[in-house]
Image (cartoon, rainbow, N blue to C red; front, side, top):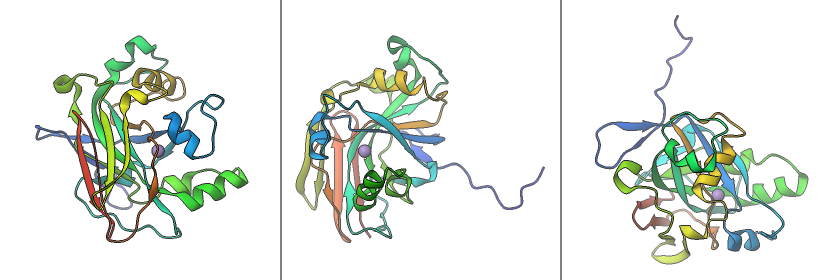
Length: 228
Ligand code: MN
């Protein structure tokens, strides 16, 4: 069989300390998974549980790569997040077995066209154009869980041009990693190559052309991109 055009290779993410890379299959994201961020977005975290949305795999942007300021927005936001990289297939996985599916962890930035998201919320429209646009999923190198285990605490932070914007601890996650993986596996059969952006803490805000956005999670890594 031949294809009508050349099939591109899958998007990939480097794995720290290894030559081989992680091929990205799908990108899932968790919404409102830190109570303080839910509140800053006008939600009540005691009444609204977290939820899922997704981005296309080719939205991936590497650490150090420039990010083009996206079209059709005047309010382009950063969201620093812990990213879970799935390395094994699983469906209806119980919480106490969920970590066995995890290949490793990375630092991600869930870039958002906040004005388009607000319009979608108001109209009850899907979030795709506000979340799943080109270059909307920055990610650091993945640290394999075989090397670092499964960190459930550690400072998560983001700065813009050196000024701190977001600071929290991944132990503040509303749904912890085993709950996220277990819950998502009841909705989709998880497969190697899937990434899960686990939600952002409070302090989201706008980015402008020329900004240098940096972030990190203690024990996992750092991520830096310039808005071009
Ligand atoms: Mn997010």
